[in-house]
Image 1 (cartoon, rainbow, N blue to C red):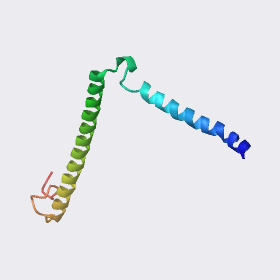
Image 2: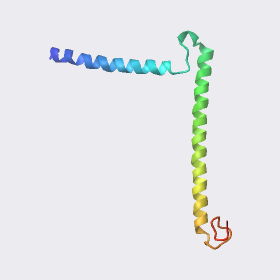
Image 3: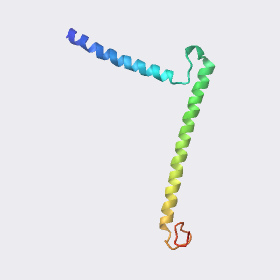
Image 4: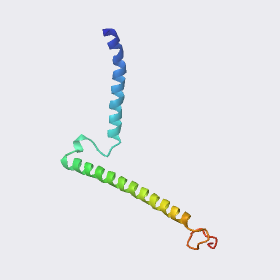
Length: 95
């Protein structure tokens, strides 16, 4: 049983190594310049910017969803208008 336990350690070590490498890549690709550059003020600014970016992304998504719904509703309303009605955007009289 002890030998089997030892055989699994290289796999565990490789998994841990991959996780640490992923974390280091994430840090290298972040806006943080390094631990010595992080003080309470810069950390606060970084977190504030992350919240702002997240909020902006959510707002953009909400707007895109809202515009898609408006367009879908407009199309549905147009489809209910008689095809010969001049109010219909694709009426025979339009050029």
